[in-house]
Length: 218
Image (tube, rainbow, N blue to C red; front, side):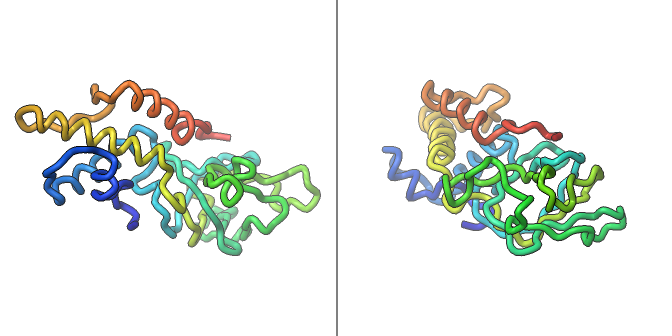
């Protein structure tokens, strides 16, 4: 999928629901809308769960843990790093030549532990093991836009099934309301968007799992 594609295809939606006679263009637009609504609720950037290669800058706040969140608080999911992908601007001159790091350095690791290829989860933070004598640097900078991660693979190799299910629930609710009466003005979740009881509890679980589960500042 492309970065901004919906997390659910029209074919997946049709296979999951019993709704018939949908307009393919309209359904695709609604699935994209449901995807964006879910992302906003989970505080992640557009396309966060889709696999993509990109370069992102992050504010660093010192300490040994870098939370992969931008200035708005949106969280990023890191799958893998190429060699020397993490650059630090230690001189505040806009160049990321202070250090070049990656996971092959024994003092740098992704968090949560045992994520990525082991559990199928992506990393949400990067830790410097400052207690090791080989650690260099021993802490992240404490400056805005001082860490640049270049050409990394972000997102998930496969969008998590629970995320797909929530997009389907959101869109199914909108389409059911449309089929039941006049055209519905699309609401937002924070303003009273309704979900089934099961979907409501799944949403709470996804907020704990993928949302603001890590503080923005180490």
